[in-house]
Image (cartoon, rainbow, N blue to C red):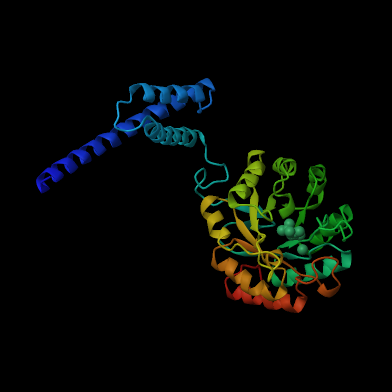
Length: 359
Ligand code: PEP
Ligand code: MN
């Protein structure tokens, strides 16, 4: 075969490839049109009877040199890609996605506009233990110009024998202290039945990591008038996390703060592994504000300052952290809550990195 003949044959192959490309896309456009018709009729995109007909037809028509099995295999790939095309057309972007809303969502809490580009702190004890303990923490927040306090009243504990929180009594203490110090409060609610009750006492309903896929709780929080701070689940992918937020949003509550709090990995140096890249991913994929809870992410008070700085550096809307008057006697998370001296240092270092406070 001369060089010239090879060039001619290759040129014909190129032309055939061009035609194949055109035909395959022409086919794809028809598939999309069929998809629209099926959708209008309420029919499913996948139709195994029709797929069988197409494969049989290939068998009837094939004159070689390709074997029928080979061609059926190639066509199955085309059928699979076509089905994906129909499914993509059907799949509507999530309400929480940037695709649906390009501007950042901001949430007004106690005069603060969460998500407005300023970086804020939510701080407070792991659990509300008493009026006096909560009041002492509130005093520190006020001193630093922090407007939102956290504190658990219903504590989801690994062991049923551990301190479970003060329940409604804890919510009452939080409300009383918050009103005395002009603070807003965030507290975790663990049962759909308590959402209504929580509205009386809290400014933001927290849904904890262990409940990220408690769909009834998500729906109940979605019906609430209070903003929701939704923690990422212990082993939840970002896709699952966004869909959990979608439960709240689609039930009517658009005021959602996401909160990365570390995920389970094989690493034992920290309690969880802070997935720092989740912050820019969530900021890109959703329009919701994103916080980072460095306390539960690390489980180590010596890592709170560097990880909080990292959270701010990657563009988090804020940081959540635990502080207690005397962590060594705290009823929960005593290894990771800050005392007031460390908290002073924590706040001043973060202010140096741009943390917004009101003093
Ligand atoms: C909490 O913030 O009190 C808490 C229990 O956190 P998480 O749900 O992230 O473990
Ligand atoms: Mn805690």
